[in-house]
Image 1: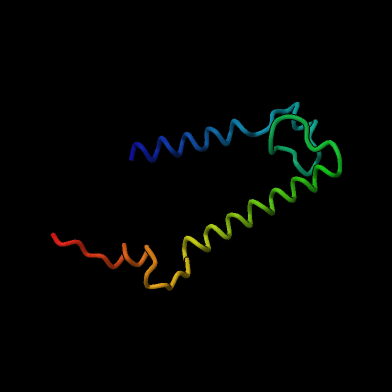
Image 2: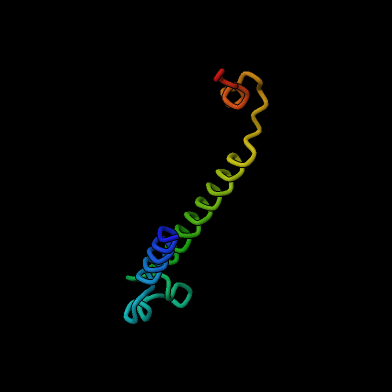
Length: 90
């Protein structure tokens, strides 16, 4: 229980420290205020780069979940099946 509480506090402590300060909020564009420190995107092309990176991360997440949850390997000689079906003699 203590470990769970420590992880919870560490996570939310790091989230709170990532929130932008007052100076950074004024310097950020309206769309990205309260997200991070520093200046925001400087040109219109920066938004395209950010959008492309977000799409790439989301696709990677979706495909990793897809292949972790349903790998779809049906070959009986696959190493996965050997490990799952092998019962060592005890």
